[in-house]
Length: 70
Image (cartoon, rainbow, N blue to C red; front, side, top):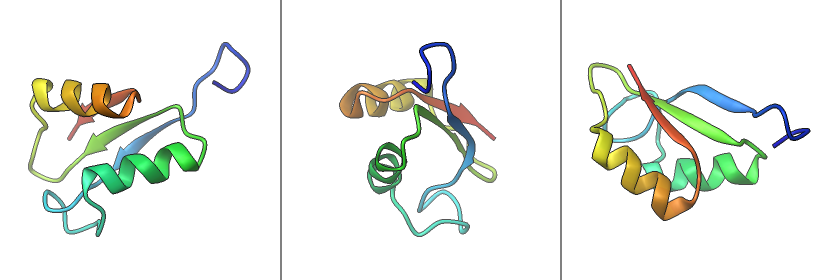
């Protein structure tokens, strides 16, 4: 959290193999997002919507807020 009241969340991120716009798998993307100081991320793939249970599992495994978009 930036100041306790705000979060920095990337609202447009892609992963391999669900998008040709990325060379990163979800785990690599999340590691880089955390290293970059982000507080959360939204996985917005082309023509693919992440299942709620898969997002919840990734979020729990990485202790990091993850949202699904398209």
